[in-house]
Image (cartoon, rainbow, N blue to C red; front, side, top):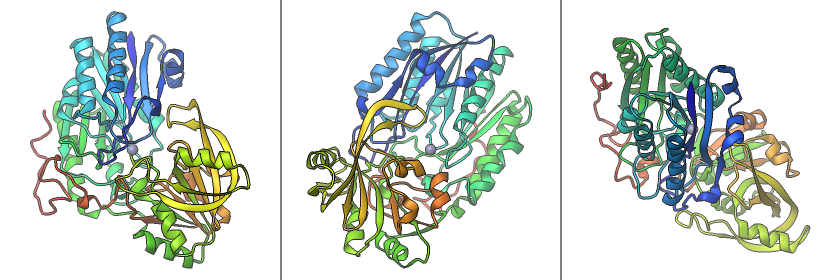
Length: 483
Ligand SMILES: [Zn+2]
């Protein structure tokens, strides 16, 4: 049994002016690609053939020429190596290629044409993927994460692969039910750690029924993509058409019924209010999410607005993690350790949502660290980082767009966030490790490409009606499963 392996993965915000280019991707091929999926060795008689996998941090739309090169290399690999029983894809599901709608639909349609109708195609998705009818027409198996924050990535990959192998071995092509659910909400309101997301996702195991229903997925979708396909969805797979349909309708209806209950999981307020609440809080540290510029949701990661407000409100002890600004890092390096510096910070990658802030401070430390791209390991690329003390606030300035999700991300820079009063992180909901030390968490409704005030965004191309844009709309999932 021969199965091709690869994929293309990024979450692309169409409200970001920052084009995602080849330099932003980590590309894996050959042994390196195979080694990223250690569980593949457990399928004794299956030969997995690594083709190409490209992954980037979330960002703006992808440069079309890069996407086309990756797709063409994948297709060439398929053509060069004979016939295939299967294709196993590691996708995100919210790629936007500049000037193109439904990039995954384009990718999968090309793959389907290359491998022919008999080959089975399976893809592992992020639950923030936007699934189109075209994707479902080209694919046989799609399974998505069941947790947000995502702690089941490897498990989802393994489950998807097992379904593919089961399908090929048993010579059974599963029935697929796909119900787009007209809901578009930010991930910060739809975590599986609190209600109603927690209860909704807990329904999944009960809908999976042996050979009848193999798998079901609930996809929240990705809201910061102004494309016709953007919406939530439910997907169900299995050998019993009626049961598959029933499972999909049950979950879609339940999702719809709880739509008004989705809410932010922590206290949410304006930037100024969050800073004031943090300053007067008894606890420390108070972690404030700079949610509008979260690079792991597609924000540029360079807006200095929260820092500007901290300085204006007189914060004397804080950490800002981080602001991407290669020029500023170079200036700090040129000035040297301990030097007094003054420069324009941030607002350059995303000039639409921010303007640079003039800061003066002292260079506390300089670093060169491996730049990590999630799920694709060490990129081998160096990320230069400067820590600058700006009136008592430790400002982390990075050469590359950099998430701060782990305690070690701070400790490696000589900063212990637990010792500071206010820690600002460009993130939405807190990743598990940040929660362990956040005595209190606040979510700031800050400006940026991934603004949480979604009904204020300039949408023009999503399907309407759509909740919450059309709050009083009626909808019923009854006859929309495609089965
Ligand atoms: Zn996600």
